Length: 273
Length: 285
Image (cartoon, rainbow over all chains, first blue to last red; front, top):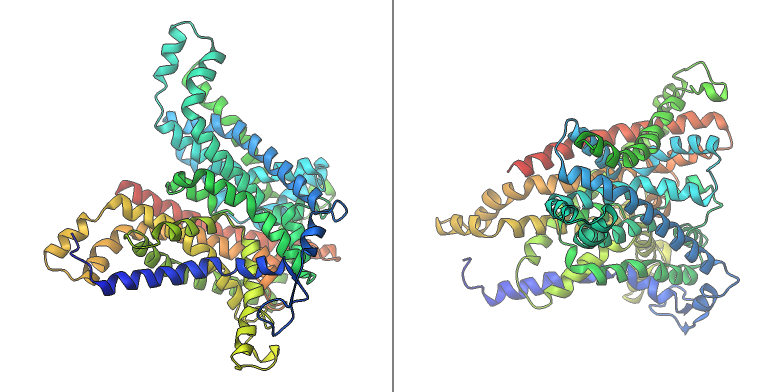
C-alpha cells in the first residue's frame, strides 16, 4: 500500500525503537545495580564492591520485608477475590441488559478510575474512624475495592456483552440445576475474563499507595509503604532489592496474559497502576 | 424473577460499595471542608477553610504547580505516544521486544519508576556520574537540579516514562482497528505521507488520544507518591500539600485539607465530563 520502504526508513525505525527501548528500561537499571552494590559513591559509574548484603537483609526473617510481602499478597488477593465476587454479577447486569438509568450507573462505576485517591480517601478516613476500620487490614482491603471494583466490573461487562445466555436456558430445560448450570455452562465461558480481570485487579491493589497510607495509618505496612520509607531514608541498596521484589508479580502476570493486553478494557485498569 | 429485580440484585453489591465508600467519601470530605459534622459535635457550617486556602499564596502555588505538571506531562506523553504507536504498527527488527517492554512498563508501579528516576537524575545519580566521567562537572552540586527542583522536571520525566506506554497502547489498538485503507486511499489520491497522517489518520485517532490523555491528566494532577518522592519541599504538588495539612498536628488544618480534596475532585469531574464526551463520540464513529 504505502510502497516499498527505503533502507533509510527502516534503519530510522530501528534506531527510534532502540531509543524507546533504552528509555523504557533505563530507570530500572540503577535500582537493579544498587541491590547488589556496597557503598556505591559519586563519581563511580559502577560499584567498586559488589555484595549480596541487601538481598540477605531483604530476605531475612528479622527485617520485616518478608512479612510486608506476605501482608501485601494477602491484601491484594483478598481485594481481588472480593472484586471478582462483586464485579462478575455487576458485569453480567451491564453486559446483558438494557435498562433505564444504565448510563448513570456506568458513570458511577467509571468515576473512581478517574478521580484521584487523595480526593476520596480523606473523607473515607473519617467514616472508617467511626466504624473502627482505620489502622486495620480489613479497612485497607475495603478501601482497595474503590479502584479495583470498577475495573473488574468493566472487564466483565465486556465479556458478558459477547455472551449468549440462551445456553443457560437450554441447560436448565434439560434438567440442570441452577448451580450445575453456573458451574458447567456459565463459568467455563466467562473464566478467561475472570482470570484476566482478576489479575489486573490484583495489580491495581498491589500498586496502591495513598489509600493504604491514610487508611492503614502507618500500622498496615504494605510493600510500597516500606519501599517509600527506605527510598526516603537513603538506603539505596535495600530500596533496590525491595523494588525488584515489588515489580515481580507484574512481570509474571504480563508473561501470563500478554496477548490479552492490547484490548481497550485491559488498559483502563492498568492506567490505575 | 423479573428482569428488573434480577438487574437490581446483580448490581446491588457494586452500587452499595461505590455509593457508601466512593460517593460517601467525597460527600463526607465536602461536609468536613465546611467544618460541618453533627455526629462529632460540629453543627455550625462555615467557609473558613475555603477563605483560608483562597487567601493563601501556598494554595495557588501548589494548584498551579500540579496543573503545570499535568498539562506538560500529558502533552509530551500524548505526542510521544502517537509517535511510538506509528512506529510499533510497522514491522521492523526488534518490534516484538519493543512491544513487550512497552507493555511491561504498564505493570511497573509509579512509585518504582519515581525511585528509578531519582537514582538516574539526582545530583549524585547516574547521569551526574556520567557527566563527571566526561569531565563536564567536578562535583555533584554542579549538575543541574532535575529532582526536588521548582520546575518539577523529575516528576514530569517519570510521568512521561509511565504515560507514553499507557496512551501509546490505546492509540496503537485504535490504529490497528482502523487499518491502513484510509491512508492508502489518501496516498493514492496524491497526498504526501505527512498529509495522509495530518488530515486522515490524526482526525480518526484523535478522540481516542483525547480520552486516554484525560485519564493521564487526572492521574498526573492527583497522584501523591510521585511528587512526594521527586518534588521540592516548596512548592509542593497539591496532593502532597493536602496530605500534609491532613496530618498536621494542628487539627484546625483538617478542613483545609478537605477543601483541597474537594478542589481535586472538582477538577477530576471536569475530566470525567470530557472523557465521557470523547469516548461516546468514538463509539458512535
